[in-house]
Image (cartoon, rainbow, N blue to C red; front, side):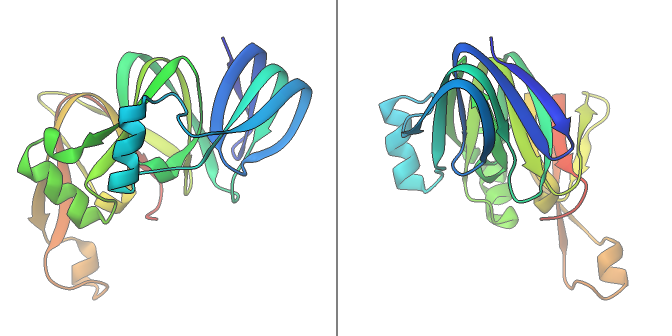
Amino acid sequence: MPVYQQINEKMLEVKLSNEEVFARKGAMVSYQGDVQFSRSFLAGQGVQSLAMRAVTNEGYAMMAAKGSGSVYYAHAGLFVTIIPVRGETLYVESDTLLAFDARLTAGTMFLGNQGGVQGVVRGAVSGQGLFTTTLQGTGEVAILSDGNTIGLPVTPDVPVFVDPQAYIGHTGQLSSNIVTDLNWKTFVGQASGESYQVKFTGQGTVYIQASER
């Protein structure tokens, strides 16, 4: 299986042994060994999922690297975090994806399927659309963020509240809904009106970035 290793906070190395990895177009900065590169339209998806991406505009340009060697990835000086996926589904914003390997199946999910109408509201409030990318199976996913990404555990007794713009992705059996409240920005005059947060409940992990995008 491909081996993912962070060279530093902003660069990823993926070691391939006659294997394939998909990465954001333009993110490859160097490679060693016998590796071939090609544009990938499916990138682990089925034709139906690809058609949904075209309709929903939840798309991303990917490049496939196949062979044996080491490939180095980075993008725009953003921080890189490796998230292991172990027989589950990772829900992630497509613009944060850096790389994932062919062991994972990519897809598109309507946010309304997660938390009903509130899921739709989450997409509308965040400005990130009503659809999100899913990666399912067993493998690794490398994501991009402004500052280091952290994972916050969610349990039935301890929900997590997240600023929509800080949201990166999540795993587990979670439901989301929108809550409104006043936050510190309102008090210091940096915002007006109601402030929106996403409340996650259930069992799983929510990934957030250290600063708003």
